[in-house]
Length: 493
Image 1 (cartoon, rainbow, N blue to C red):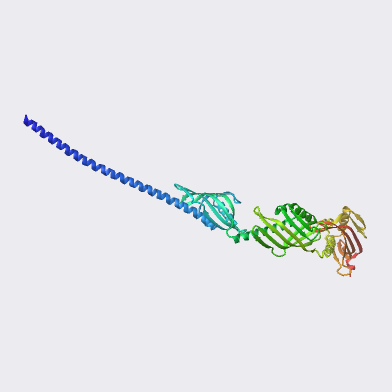
Image 2: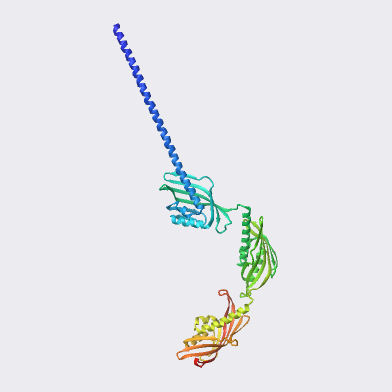
């Protein structure tokens, strides 16, 4: 019994010892596997972090590439290089232009190129900057850039002038063959104006603007437009008129405009030019323009007459409400006279030309050219031959010339060049006379050639100046066709 118990105890002790050994061994193995798993998990986490970092870096690289493309686009606009700008678009891109003369939606590279060409033709120089860092959003193979940009520009029309355009910009990109291309663009003008950099430039621009205001004033006088003149004055402006029937000092806008209205009622047409370049001086917000101008005028009383006025001109301006206004004006007439000094000689030439032209139209037998030369109530006196008689009014004269042309297949004429036989022109007021003592017509019918010697007398009346032709409207009111001799051409020496 004691021996059995002892053996049992030994067995139990051995079992316990083995259990402890196995437990220790299992625990060691478990501890080893857990450590390896933890290590693997740590490696996975590290790899994921690296992947995330690489992805973020890749996205940042994409965003940087897109931003670089945007800046490149804006730079190519400023250097006005159409070939570089054009290469940045997809072929079916769209440009939305909002504001200004180019407003519209342009689809396709051809329309976009044409639009940028128009823009470049407006401006001789362009600069830009982004007012704040642009915003870039990338999603896969597409990206969007938004920015508030200011473009500073000088126009071809006035290269001393500096302007700005504030642009709310949107560029939509797509990745094509590893290059970011614009497929949609929004150019939205949200502000514009003028920039001045230096006092010298400001002074120059002020002087230029004052001179422009002076020329505009003189031009509006020439076109006789009181409504355009009125806003050029301050309300308390003064006009000093020296010389002529309007001499006086006129104060206040109303009095000044009334004076110009009287001036315009004297002259039916006015032109002007400056005899020498005007002088401009600017001091702060005031400016003075002095000039020697000549105004060419035609009076209502005699619209075929041309006169001139030489004006010593002074215009004093004040800058108010963003424009130059006249507060003092001196119109000093220092010379006047007639430009048409040989007016009477010109009228003589005109009557002589009309008379010869009338005879020439008879020679070419053109009734449609002859009849407009007569007044409606004109009279034609035919002295001899089968057409002898007195024909009164337009219709009878027309019939008479038609009969004359029916008698002859062809007509020629010449007027004597002998000084004693040259046509004589006399003018008395609105009445003029053309007298030719010898005009010879050579005529032909079926039997042969004949001559007709004619003493010609034409009385013209001036029905007034015709603005359509620029001449006085002289019409025949009385005509004498005195055929003094008729015979076969063989009888002529």
